[in-house]
Length: 230
Length: 252
Image (cartoon, rainbow over all chains, first blue to last red; front, side):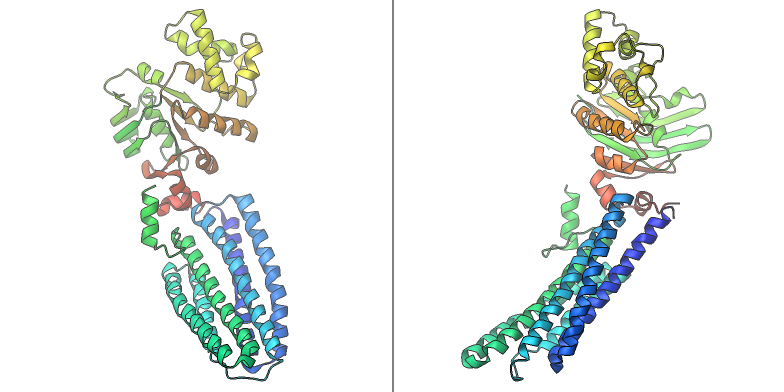
């Protein structure tokens, strides 16, 4: 090893991003718990956590910018820093989604508890599992594990689609339930976005580890073939 | 115009030291090709084999073939003929210190027997313009010596001197390593412009420089060509772990 300090800085950057990601993951869990038990004090925790996440986002971008400017990284190190910058943005947006959910839980508080035709906890479990797996693939630099996250996204999309139609039906049949149904729809939509961010994180891990750009349903093999033909 | 270079089974020795081993590669015409690798990896020896300078050392030996365009340089041409077609620029600018700027540039032509004043004037002006030095020296061509110029200007003077004999290939061995960033940028800009007329091979320890100027890059290690690919591929996602370890500083 010759660039010891630089590579230690990359490790520090990774660690910081993982701390922030842990906070975002916890924020989603808290927001869903607040929905389940209708406890607004948990919503306050989500809001406070969001401020810390935003602070981390700025620090990570600044460190990444400094390393790009001062160390002029190459190859896997360059891909790592690019991946960190993008994952950083996605993790911050996961935190934003938690805040959106918590805001909706606050709004729902004005209405009596109703049995809505949408399984929010199940969607949340799936979306959170995607985030956790994407982050695990980042910790272990495991492109195969990251690839498996991509295929999980369809299930969350499907649940979100089902939620849309069930809640639309509810609004048609019981118009007085429209406000609750709309809030639930927004929560489902936020969880679907969380799953999308997990997908983005997994794609960035694949790019970092293998150099392949698999965004927009491009497979690793297609990517390699297009690179070879250049 | 630049020409392509085809290297087949090239091996080189200094005494018993086998410094280049089974090198095979094709260099494209009118492109800049960068050669990178740690000190002693063989990249400078490789470049010196391309203009038959390696063999000037009595204990050196070369086998294999090198074709520059249609010319088999080890079988069809004399070293003098080869060096006329392949110009070389070295790490430290080496103008002839007692000669004027004009005489430095004209020296190669005079060695080749050119005496016509008008032709020499034309070639000196054209070469200095190609080397992006003309505007800075045109008023003192015959008054100032080559050694009185700044380091960056001296290096461009050496490039002009190399271009004056109308080569097809320009070999540059660390051409900017002794220069400040502004002079380095001028040399790099120059490499870009020269590509349209010459084939350029540049040995460099500066990875960013290779990434900036070259279309293709070769990585040498322990006398072997480990990887040769588009510069984009080498610096973003090389195929060989040894290349990646070297360019990311994990090497050694």
